[in-house]
Length: 402
Image 1 (tube, rainbow, N blue to C red):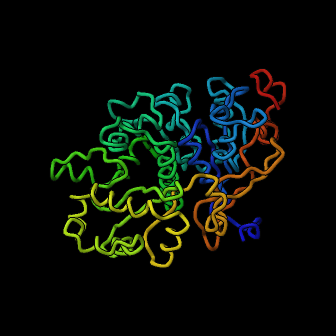
Image 2 (image 1 turned 90 degrees about the vertical axis):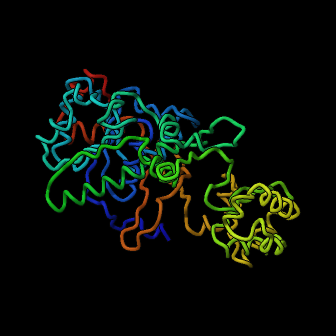
Image 3 (image 1 turned 180 degrees about the horizontal axis):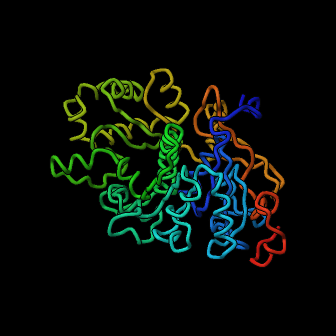
């Protein structure tokens, strides 16, 4: 179905973005905007580029994750510490709506590219500034990455088992959650610009989104003095909630977030007696006896294979899901039907690249991915020479190839 929308309009068609950022959180914000039609120009250092080009796995020397995070963008190479870099950015800013940056607080000001300078060129400019600790406060000059935010915001403290060290996530949760919030706040600022013509700064610290997403532990501490501790996959406000191993060595997740959900789970595992067991009769009782409840559920699940569990779940409407590895995700019927993974053309590798598709569906202006992340400086000629009027000789003086 999505293939039929290849040339359809997108909600952010005509929005122009200058992406000065590196690594993950801020570039991913730009990715979300590009998915919905924004024209995103990514500025990278000559010869070196964004360091995410060298993160993780490569194929034929090409960084694969870069291809995902910078999909749909155009790449130019400029050193922002040089005269031509500063000059070119100022000229590009003249007709963009949004600038995205994630340098340490004060860095762009040091280079003569602070918001106070750029808004004189373009009064309606929106600048999205993503840093470890924000533009204000005593820690504003500290360096910050998603891993530090996951610890600082309180995520790591509550993750893991009670007898084990705090556990960091197995993916860039701090960066990814920040990217989603940054894209949302960018849309808020863009709406204000369309209403009034005014630009503004979006000042977002990487730890802030996680701090809000972590659940009720803030209000519980404020009102009750409670400090949430590590308790594996269990939650402090509903039970059962855990992972359980099936007879064939697979894993499932169960969430009994309501009384009806708990009763369906008991029906699925053939243990209707648990519903009336005084230890598990309601959610409060189940929380007080969560380890005993997990033991009862695991014993029953351990006698069933994954296929049986899932077919019974379908029949009973039980809240169960398989714990998928990525190979299972590729083969999953629902993910195929929703086209959650797509294959995107890439000129650098010469083959389509599989990646996560645009998140969610818009019925009138759906997003789409036009291309994988570009090769370094792939659009130097188009933008720096044909658009801004530089000559090849001028660019070569600063190590910029075309």
